[in-house]
Length: 166
Ligand SMILES: CC(C)(COP(=O)(O)OP(=O)(O)OC[C@H]1O[C@@H](n2cnc3c(N)ncnc32)[C@H](O)[C@@H]1OP(=O)(O)O)[C@@H](O)C(=O)NCCC(=O)NCCS
Image (cartoon, rainbow, N blue to C red; front, side):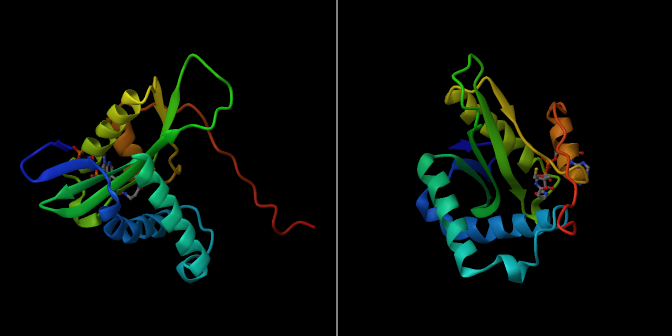
């Protein structure tokens, strides 16, 4: 566990944290839905999806690839990290950071900065030479965060609606 100040602690999550992590992850999803609409909360929060989310978070925790930030004991943030899906054996190892979330009432106090830095450290400890992440183009707060942390833009994701074509 890394304690960055008297009241803030950043640690690799354990199974006992899952109960607090799950609703926080859904709040992150709700936020991201404003940037990438894939259905209403009612449409998405089905039993099958809830089970998928639980399995996803559980596996990240068991792999030791989910960090949480607690302030005075309360869970205020989370993020995950994992190797990217590059299938070739390569001299440069790339890991990805994702699911970065800080509770609205805890923002602009440097918590995401501390979490992402710790995430980078965890990736490095597991052999990463480089970390990458994806941000929606309209997510100004996240772009501001990653810019302040020294991240560069290296790719664009393009999309086109084909659902209404026959
Ligand atoms: C993006 C997010 C994680 C930032 O968390 P945070 O704890 O407030 O970030 P920090 O306090 O570490 O901010 C560090 C820097 O990032 C930038 N930043 C943070 N929030 C910003 C905002 N709303 N607008 C512009 N820049 C912002 C600033 O440069 C800030 O430094 P400053 O406060 O000294 O100006 C948080 O707003 C969040 O959870 N948003 C919703 C989920 C999300 O978008 N996650 C990212 C997915 S890729």
